[in-house]
Length: 217
Image 1: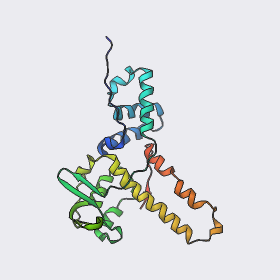
Image 2 (image 1 turned 120 degrees about the vertical axis):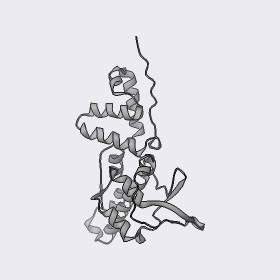
Image 3 (image 1 turned 90 degrees about the horizontal axis):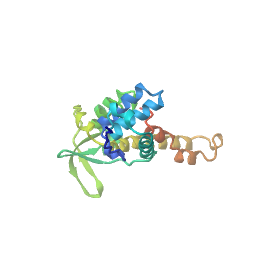
Image 4 (image 1 turned 60 degrees about the vertical axis):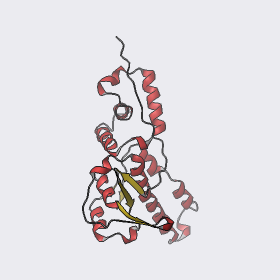
């Protein structure tokens, strides 16, 4: 008897929690040299197809799902979300990184890299803290950093929020590169170097193609 499998494929990163993303990346890392296995793992995690049913999916349906997921994973920039509500608590992103307390800076600096891995929810817990006051012109205040890290709430936050934060640091890095180049002799560099940097989506593409990339602290 032919069995029908109902599949609901995820189509946006806002549908994927950090917990699901980390589980998927952990599985993919083990089979990163086997593209067929990677495709199957993505279909399992993002389309909800049980492992034991993957071999029963028709070639036509399999290719359609792969095409949908490939569109879903195409590079796209995501904006930093300054406010995130988890349960009944509103969290705000660190308003002024240049004035971040030494304790918060030291706790983030203990990680060799800033990337979305098992340490990422800890970093988010440091950067986002409960909002205590909102003022005019978009100004706001958040709780002072006490050294308490609670990573669990951030595991259920969706990837559009996490990628938005990661891209924020990526753009900071690119801006720093451009500012550094401006301070050096122009003739030492390709005349279109600024355009190249602005249009470079290589790092973003690698992130969204599920290749682990890191930003050095």
